[in-house]
Image (cartoon, rainbow, N blue to C red; front, top):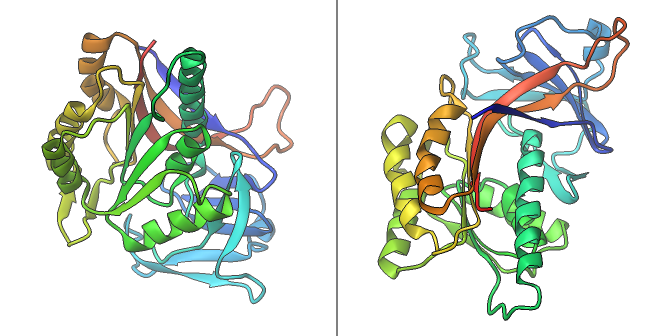
Length: 312
């Protein structure tokens, strides 16, 4: 299995302007934001003066700058609390949070495009046949809805699960903003593990599953999630939820220290059972074009890992 690098490039409403010194400088629509990024272990290209033009800067509350720690955004007076952008053919609200997040992970664009392509290919195969229902997709740890909206836009029925009421609210808002508010998406405020076990008891089946598990988190009732303890049992339960002819299974990862091969190894059970193909690798964002030496290429900021299986 070869390692694949998926890259998000500049769009009209999004670009990675610069990165380095454990920070990144991004433009979301009309505003430029600077925030920490531990993967940016190199020097910045742009000057201090350019970075100081940012409309918002995130500063961690603790001196250690530990990942996941709370902080505070210092915004210029003209910056709104929330604003819309067009991205990857969808629409999202950008809303900076005390944990440095902004409501979207741009590096996921390639996965969303892959999802849409797989669903549209399936629809083409079924053209002329009797199709009694839409493909059923389960999106666990769905956050603000990017993958769910990509599925709905491609004609699927989606169950979107997240343990955060705030995330569910943002996802619904993004669906409305994208013109997908009337699409068949069930918004479930629930712990992913509890929801999957109930679906197994109900004998529900899904044609595809998407998982974006954090390294540590809490469910809707405060249930503690630790990826090193909970990922494999949840994955094994999810396998039991798949239909007789599943379309795909996508796993994203942001837990430091894990390799995409670790996720891909889990997906081999699907390849053994259904055939198909497995891809795994890194999710990256390409910096905006700058003046570089002859032959130089734009830098890629590593942002996460993925592994995905799909039927032929």
